Length: 372
Image 1 (cartoon, rainbow, N blue to C red):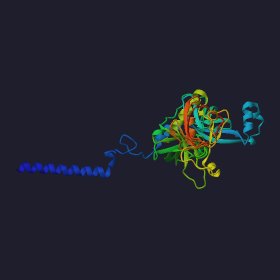
Image 2: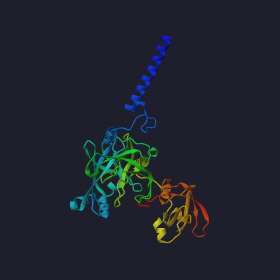
Image 3: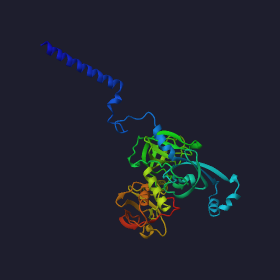
Image 4: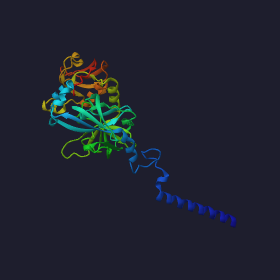
């Protein structure tokens, strides 16, 4: 009997001791239990430092300095035709501009914002180790405000890209770049929203919105996640009185597509129908009833597929390939994603008789100078 009591006592003491140890672990070291809801993966908790992410991206970020003429685009074009005239222009007629860029290949292809180098006479790239090299323009895409540069270098460290479609609102992100000439500067924030459009910056808008700072000089630099992988290219800031922490980046998936097209072909080929859409404010000023669904045509270009298909002003386009059109930018994006020569189906409502129509058209190459 005594032996049984001692055994029960031992078991009870063991249980009490185990519970006590468990309580201490939960109270003082909860991280030892892991966190199944952690977004970092592998039961890890959020890092207290992002230094490893910054170290990973730093060798891939470059500072860009350009020299361009002040308010003289025609003179810039003339200089490109006759470089010898450059020595005749006084320095007082030029201005300096700075931006950022991202190394895409080991042999010196760099992506940046088109507006950084748009009217550049000379482009200088400063690597993370302060090596200075002159760059040339390989091609650009004014539809997305991206440009590809090339420097003569080898054994560079290309950036690692994340799938921007998998990024989510609330993810931690950082901008890395050259704001106001302060190279390799880092700002922390989160993704505030995805798929932003209607900002009236570029034709195709599918921005990542972030509160991570994008200042003058950040344009063209990377927006990275907590692992140091690129999710976007810093592009613009919402410049309105009182606006703070509203910045935009071009998604990494778009960036890689544009990079590949320019590197391979020197340009990005996109479909075009020759339709210009009315902006909501134009419809209101004209006192035309706002369409309940779709978008309204304001003009049709000559010698275009749209004019051949008898599209008219005030016709309503509701669907492209059976995809319902949300707004003007959605229409432009869907058409621009097609390749020249591709056949598409466009549905809508005629302004002439108010009846629905469905037309088959073949896209042509989008004029490179076209903004919208």
